[in-house]
Length: 60
Image 1 (tube, helix red, strand yellow):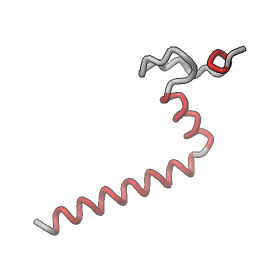
Image 2 (tube, one colour):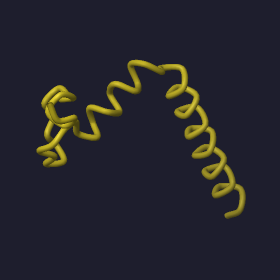
Image 3 (cartoon, helix red, strand yellow):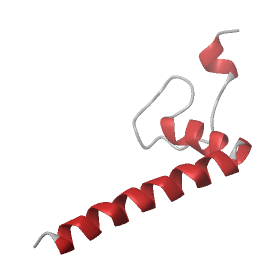
Image 4 (spheres, helix red, strand yellow):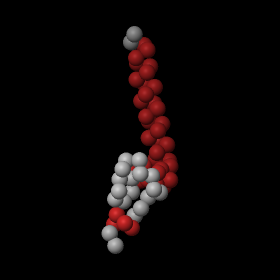
């Protein structure tokens, strides 16, 4: 059995991938397995965006 045939995703084919899992499926599984990790990334991204926004408003 080939790897790509044995490891199918949920069927989301948004990127046109015909072999194996789509990127969406991989991210979906990773978020389910490691929710705290993704929350910390989300918090860091929001903090970085806010920092950039604050700098932009104070320098003008």
